[in-house]
Image (tube, rainbow, N blue to C red):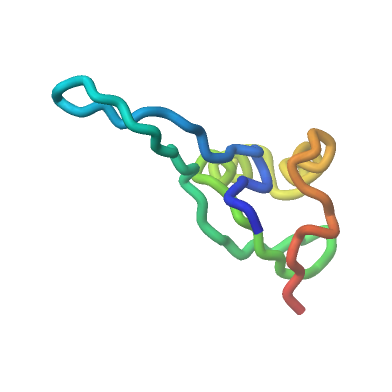
Length: 86
């Protein structure tokens, strides 16, 4: 699975390391991702999502069901990509 948030769609950005002498080399800025387990009340099951810190705040603000529906609508994830545990 790639390093993309399933809720917000955040992914790695490319930028420069800038040394003291202003020499620039390429680097990547990775998203702050972690795997988190949620209880999905509407489906009565546990699911595992790979989300960023901003995605976790969004779930806390609007709720898991509404955040998942918005992510699927925007194309960040599909329901078949979500890992269901028992």
